[in-house]
Image (tube, rainbow, N blue to C red; front, side, top):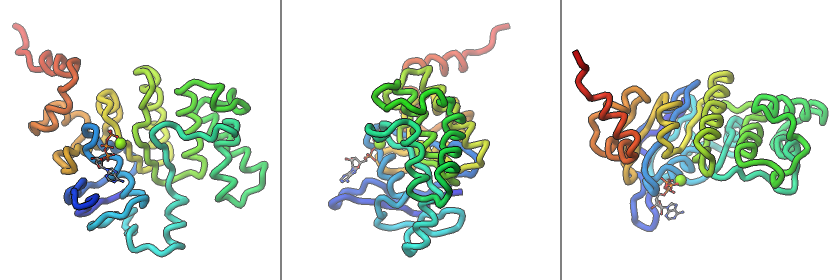
Length: 256
Ligand SMILES: Nc1ncnc2c1ncn2[C@@H]1O[C@H](COP(=O)(O)OP(=O)(O)OP(=O)(O)O)[C@@H](O)[C@H]1O
Ligand SMILES: [Mg+2]
């Protein structure tokens, strides 16, 4: 479980996150949703320690991030897997070498063991055939899967994904969502995903934090999201025509 308490962040006197409180649960795909510029990436960067909040606490299963010394921070870093906007694979490395990279950096296992672990992760994302290919030789969806394999290579307790579906078609996005969801369940990870993809909200929104202009407006799950009374949330959700139509159908009185 990751807890954020009273987290605020400003840039040059402009407040971008206002006193955010949120709980991200273990074994669930937790989503941070909101419009472009609402503060999702800044929040995620604060959570993973890439940015320091002005005020507030971030607790990793009770362990407070801000006050950690270098050694404690290194322990925590090893428990985190990350998937950033774009897949950020190394172009000069094969898919297998990319997945082995964190293992080479952080693991004391033998080469054979590291390779075996990397192949296991590639199998998990259904990408064994692509092990010898370079990022330029595979599709965007395959790149995302390779990046997921790399993110889980060290068997993280916490997985962070910033817009994992950006640039993917709806079908491929669904495959990536399902993959992240099933990996989260299998390894009981605490997964936090930034997204504005409404399909993701509906499909894997087990715990959703909605932020608007840096303020947490609402928290709930994908069932509650469709009937929530929060105006800002509704404006966000039903900005898409499709979802407005779904809502209209659901609200129609039954015949008979
Ligand atoms: N390093 C920075 N310095 C100054 N302002 C920043 C910095 N990083 C982000 N911001 C500002 O903080 C606000 C929130 O940005 P953020 O990137 O978190 O939005 P977002 O919700 O992730 O948007 P998107 O959906 O487009 O990725 C924006 O107004 C942005 O300009
Ligand atoms: Mg962002």
